[in-house]
Image 1: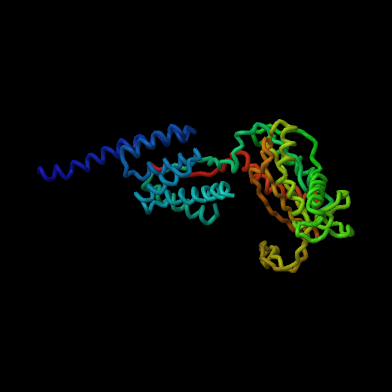
Image 2: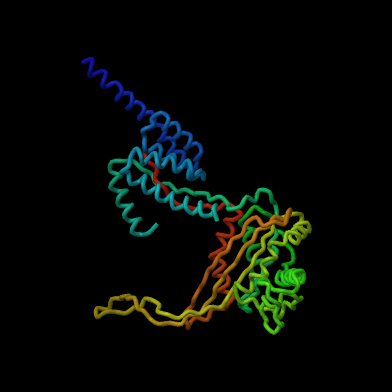
Length: 111
Length: 276
């Protein structure tokens, strides 16, 4: 009983973190849909702090950074999202589209 | 995005949506300008060394087009001034350089007898610009030293209160190419259905090559800050009679976004998926 309780405790804590992070993620999505991207980024950053294993939060954060032209941060966030959830095709698709634009911007800067 | 990829991603999205919540949102990705122009409030599109087709005054048309584009698509104030006859100025500059170096051309060999109408052999004397024909890059090359004439551009800069100066060269050359061209031919089958099949035909097509070089000069110092060369071409089938000026604008239309992205932030529209 005691052993079972000790094993279950961290999992419960993780669930709690995910639930809390999810609230930030959802709020971030709602404000991003209204064009308030800076506010959305702030919420998704909070979500990744609360739950550093939450791939969706990193994906959204990457999209937000991309929208703000912060390409280096966007790349890092996309890569983190893919590291956490390598088989997520939606994250991969976002990343591919981002890379296409980022390559174009890099070419412009280096020309 | 390609249609196949779009369809695949849509199908995938539908499958995944069964287990994940996602939202597609439009985004505008800003691409930073290639040049930092924060030190300038005004821009002077000065003039261009122009050559190629005589049907289009590429100097005048390029100045007019770029000025109007910058007026509506950049924060820089565009200076209205007479277009510089840059070919004339460059020839004078070239002649002065030739005289300084003892009347030899850039390769160290003596200048020609003037019977040629191209630039290379006429460098050591003052030349009537009306007799000069710029036909290709080779003809332009000796004249392009004008862009490195810091004293000249500094003087122009002082005259217009130190703006960012845009100059360069524009070659608009008639061009012809023959070969096999694939085109689509339509026909109606026995059941009256419209069909389209690719057909390869030998064709001699005519058109133009546009090769502009944009040079951005700091009006405060006369020094070149940045330069960029583009090349675009267009070919028409023999049945098409497209005026040279229309072709010029068609080709410039392709280049203008790249030109603008040198000076001002451009936004790329797209969409991304947000996940819960």
